[in-house]
Amino acid sequence: MSDRSNLAASIDGAPLSEEEARDLWTRFSRHMDEHRGDMAGFARENGYVSVTPTFERGRALLVVRTTEAPPEKPAPRPGGDRPAPRPGGDRPAPRANGKPAPRGGAPARGKRRR
Image (cartoon, rainbow, N blue to C red; front, side):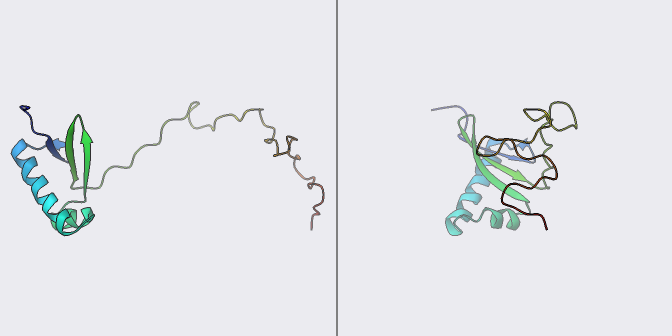
C-alpha cells in the first residue's frame, strides 16, 4: 500500500491536508449519492463558487473555488495584435470550384444587383 492517499483536494489552489481532503471527499460523495450530478448544489450549500472532481498524478482531486476564476487570457498570436496573414496575400479565398472569388463590385454570374 502507498504512503500517500489516493484522494486529494484543493481550495483556490491551496492543497488540503489528507484528513481535510478525505472529509471533503466524504461530504461531496454523500451529496452526489443523494443528488446525482448536482455539483453546483454541493458548492452552493458549502459556500463555494464551484467544485470539480478531476484526476491528477494518479489521484482523484477535488478542485474547489471560493471566488470566480480569473478569465483565461487568449493565446498570443504571432505578430502581436495584427491578424495572421492569409495564404495568398490579400486575394479572396478560392470558391469551391477552385476559381478565385470575384473582387469587389462585380456580381457573381446569374445574380443581379438591386
